[in-house]
Image 1 (cartoon, one colour):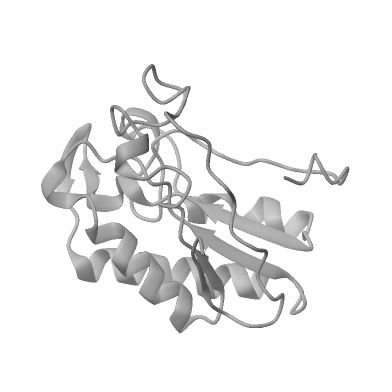
Image 2 (cartoon, helix red, strand yellow; image 1 turned 180 degrees about the horizontal axis):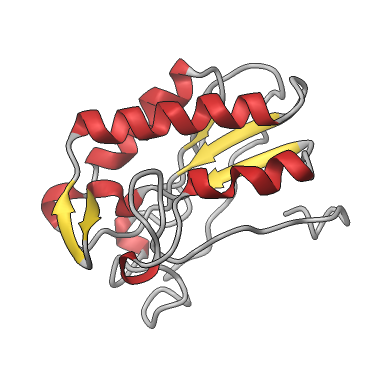
Length: 172
């Protein structure tokens, strides 16, 4: 979106990482480990995208179930530190991808907690299920994987949020 608007976009991401869970094979960093980059170069807009993998964390290189309390503490700590790292006029949007985890029993749990924490911190939560509803995502995996590269039908994006009112954006 930023590139389309011809503004400088900086991406600081790590596959599989989240608020609680370190990235790829439990060997890299979490969202909070990237706050220093934001402090060094404060943006005008921040999109925090992720968290579906936070149904689990790591013990060594094995996945262990994350409790609701552990997840809420990690999200709240991250959002508090993020807001402290950027100027007060910075717009912060939090969204969770509509795909994953492959553990069906854990699918909605991280999203509900992330949404609640975002609202509690007065940042805008963007619902993404409008873009890739389950009927539109063949294998429920990220779109870099076969099966979700070409959605069955095109999605229409929701209207942009009002820049000063925390809310949940959904497709209308």
